[in-house]
Image 1 (tube, rainbow, N blue to C red):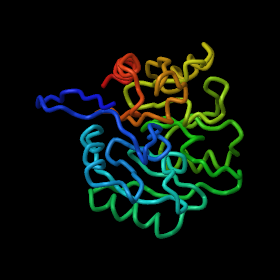
Image 2: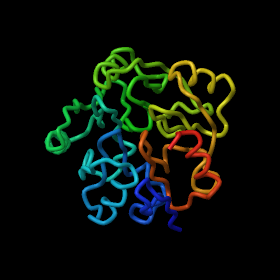
Image 3: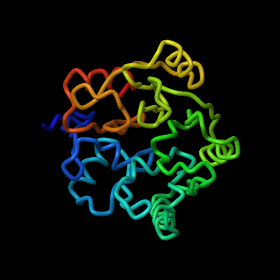
Length: 239
């Protein structure tokens, strides 16, 4: 299934995608207001369509010698944090590619002190705030604050500590796990100072971050998304 929406210029923009046959595109990719990180082997055509959907430039790379970039990386307009096992060459590739686009984001590895590798799964962030896995140590939280230049808080969404998979946050709104409690939703609203809604992806899956990439200018969703779910995404994230 391919869904499209018309942009301001009247051109159709593809909004739903698969990566390596999987509708869980948030496992393989991550985006900010300016950059989209994609696996190295992604075709030029797919990269270009995702660039159009998100209005960003794509950087193709691996992280820790895998294509699971959405699980192993997280970023915002101020920096990127990658898996502790990211190679020096992979960090250089992201840094150099970002510089070519005139960007100056920091790119660092998450310290290995907490034995957590799936950075994208344990950090939910926009350009000003981050919610992180409640078991992260304070020194690691300080690294997140400094690199992303955010205020950082610990918490859960839908009872899950993997907050980066349980929601997507932009600078306009948040779409969260459909089983998030009233207390969790209120906490998200308070710390991000943004409207928060609940929803699902890929025909009822509550792990929003597993199948949705978004920024303030657009979004890209998994190919199994329903029309109702797309409507909720557009309402929640104001895109």
